[in-house]
Image (cartoon, rainbow, N blue to C red; front, side):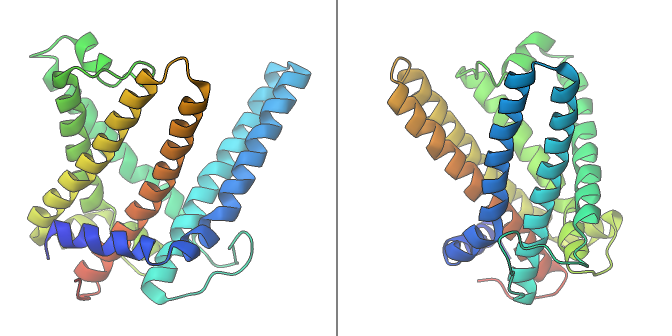
Length: 260
């Protein structure tokens, strides 16, 4: 197994089943857009901080539940060929909340690692220079900042992918621990590093390109809208690609399936 093969196999899983990918996730994303508009309308109409907080929490709960649902259903479709049903493909027995909480645990571990790396980096750089590189409101195009974002993304992806084999296991009702995920993926560390590198390169490249275009498009509402919609489409595809990558890794490493 090599990282590029895993990436290409997962890429083809999404592009070759694009209709199913839309079927699995489309209902949830449509409801998310509607809920977002309703939330904004209610907040603007009532001008109530309390209602804004209540509806904001409800919206967040629905968002994390829906993301987990899409991931679980897609894992089961890819690995079990289980066909989803309904506008929102939920059925009793799917371990949606378990998937979510395991995902949160893995993300917290990655964030803890990044926090340690941040304090180590402050020995060599000013904290404000480090934080500037990750300012989403004014994404820096300074080469050092781009390199810093790329390195952090690479390390975060590597640790996440090594730990996240547990997520497809949860979706499939199979037994695997976070420690077991780390141990199972150890022999494939080299391939996962290459995979993390490719993911960081793709995500970083698209993000950099869209930021450059948005900066160039200042003053053109139409072009800014087109770039924003294209960015949203990419983020959806990248989300489905990452779920497919976890499915492919689990299928190859744990279930011993061939990947080509």
